[in-house]
Length: 131
Ligand code: SF4
Image (cartoon, rainbow, N blue to C red; front, side):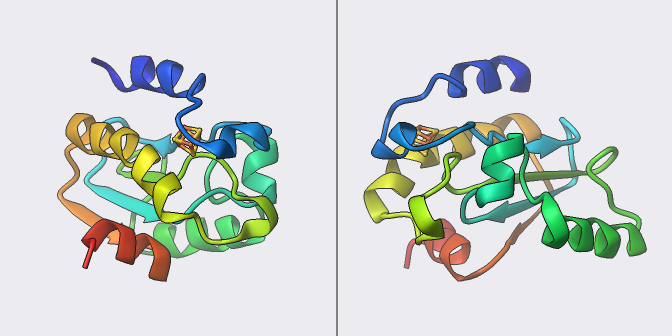
């Protein structure tokens, strides 16, 4: 399966309760065969509105830092989240929401096959490492 086909499937996902309050499914964004994959915890208000990960001021700052080390979403970075739909009031995703959404992320890893994975923040690291 191609990344685009997976995205199409994910856009209709209703595997957890976050589908009830989302505006958009924020599947991910970046190069289809990125060397570096960044994983955050979930979309915020701007991301939910635009359907893209890490937009707004923090996203611009991230892009700026990436550019400084010759990385960009256009050529060698892919950005995704543990949960693809925004948790209300930006709360941490519940364990059952992360568990429901994780298969999407696993499939993204399988298709993109990044060399380096960077967890952005506590929740992303905890869910990815599953201590
Ligand atoms: S957060 Fe993930 S599992 Fe839950 S509805 Fe959205 S895409 Fe599906």
